[in-house]
Image 1 (cartoon, rainbow, N blue to C red):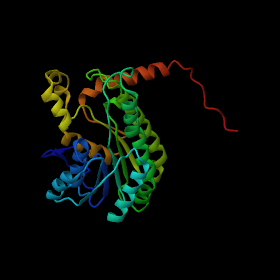
Image 2: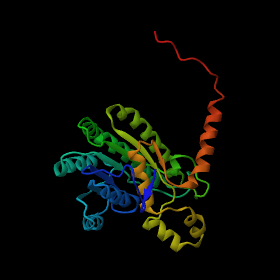
Image 3: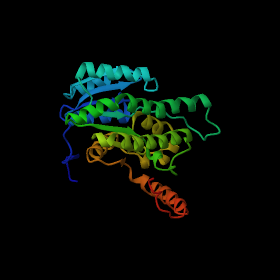
Image 4: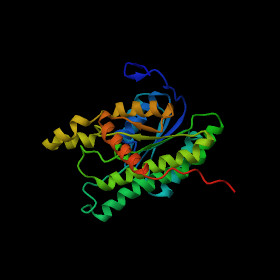
Length: 280
């Protein structure tokens, strides 16, 4: 794939594709919205917080965009988002399920109520988005429009990063998002819906920049590994439109993710080789 002025030449066009981005008011979500708009998409920004600033910035760049406030862990909110998007745009072609939450610390120290919130947003919220929007994506595919589902996981979906302090419940939920991406692919791909897992590493969101600025330790443990949000978003849509099942964006994810995969293969290879059961 070739690049021109920071943008890939192939797979650029999403002209008029109605694209829903959760967690779209800031961070990676806002960068995904910007990238989708640059490719011609019409946008519905969804966030638990007010997205007015994001909407204004996108409109100033020429994007057609609306927003709504919602908590993806509440299925009633997600159903309302679908209804509002259909009322405004008439259909849904691309869903970027990006909203997420985190809690720091190992499993035995994180507070159960904090862990429960992370599970609800990252796992139940992702499930809610798939469950509610799947039928609309099938309809887009059947009509010959773009039909894509992108779930934001993490490099934590691919292993346990050695360059990250323990955020163990977050890591566990991002493993679950990988499972949701794989099962959604099985459930939807026969209908022509493309499904991808976005797996970024440290990314320079406003929150991460604040951590780096406030903590000298973060200068050495985070900054060297971090990517710009725009770079992650560019790679995300290139990978989605190219049909990649897992879109890992950060080169620092490679070694530990491959080690995780090799360990899994080595353990599974201990099983004896047998033929498939004969159908009766």
